[in-house]
Image 1 (cartoon, rainbow over the protein chains, first blue to last red):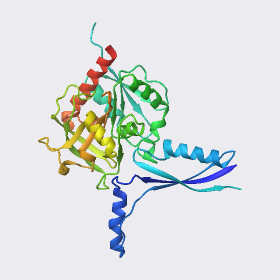
Image 2: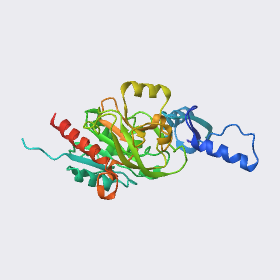
Image 3: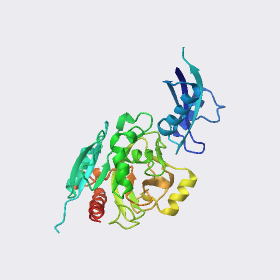
Image 4: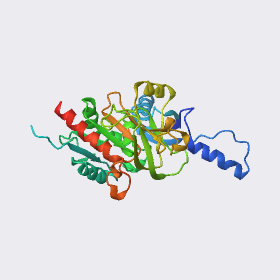
Length: 85
Length: 238
């Protein structure tokens, strides 16, 4: 079976996020002066073949831990599990 | 026994661009440069390994992340584990952090700009394969050129690094003063280079391989390579 996953990778809270800061400082110029915080992360969409959903999810967690994110500075969340027809 | 010339391996990954300068710097300082290929499982009997600067695998995902899983990195891990000297420069430093051979990580510069200029480094410890011949407090001039060189680590990790003396170089003024004004990229505590607990694995963002020839600028890289060469021979002879 083919499963689709989305993995969200974000910098750990408390670490400097220069990209988020740059976006935050650009927003007031467009008239949005009420934005308090912006954090920029990564969105990774992937599909994989596995016998069942729990096997697939376990593999995505392992991949997110070993390559898709750097646990030293980043957290990840697995979103949207869909079985493709 | 006659003195042997140390063999220093330089790994080429797809996207490496300072591999030739690293080989040239090794030769200038009296060593034999040996080209190594990312796809091989072979360190060709070298006495030390250099991971050069560049943009391995296009810096996709994160700088150094994909190179970490190249076949030759298995050999580098094994070599490091038995005390072999390993130096990562710029992208090579990022690869060593991603490989967990060194603590911390490198993220986007505080300014969001690519920074290319000469900096002064203050040597923080002589307990490393690239500073064995240097004295803490000494300063070295060499260039930096990177967009993602801000060193970060979690507080707990930073405390451990401080107590174990794992910081090898800090960005400083010409007089050796370390302050925020001389931090070119937003690195925590001006950290420019770090080592592992044993001192045989070192990474730094600045480029010692571009600083060995007085005809083209600063020469702070000479003593870094001189230390690496003598450490390589010492380890090989032990």
